[in-house]
Amino acid sequence: MSKFRMAVSGLSASAALIVALAVGEGYVGEAMIPTKDDRPTVGFGSTFKTDGTPVKMGDRTDPVRALMTLHAHLSREERAFRASLPDVALTQGEYDLYMDFVYQYGAATWSSSSMRRALMTGDYRAACDALLRYRFAAGFDCSTPGNRRCPGVWTRQQERHAKCLAEQGA
Image 1 (cartoon, rainbow, N blue to C red):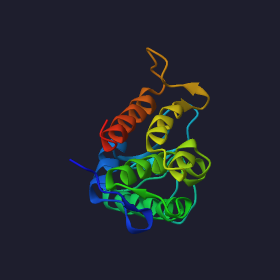
Image 2 (cartoon, rainbow, N blue to C red):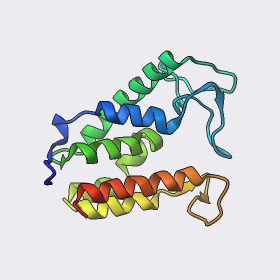
Image 3 (cartoon, one colour):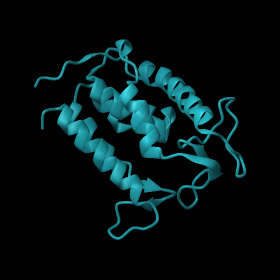
């Protein structure tokens, strides 16, 4: 099956991505720290409230508000993501997996990433492989065998990498 690429400016986050983010992040009604030395998160992994203020320990939400916050956060990041890839074409699958990355790491990290640079030159495989460079949490290498501190960080990157390769037909 061939994958159709179109200009990033004509794509948007799919409903499948929003559901996958909600399921993958998991819901918590009261702020918590997901990994050592991380920022407090609430709802579906949100580190900021819809008004832009950081989440603090003790903050609470409900599932509906959490979903609204996820969507608001994704919409903000999506504008920056699209602007960072002028004249680049992606499949919907590529768009969603890179937006998943941006949701976790932020548009600033994305903008300076080797993934973005590879996409700008049309090297889709190199962009996929660059996903595996993002395996650290607070300076700790989450790909370390037996890691109990942040295994989800590495697992998530491996899943993104596999999806990305599948989009290339690999």
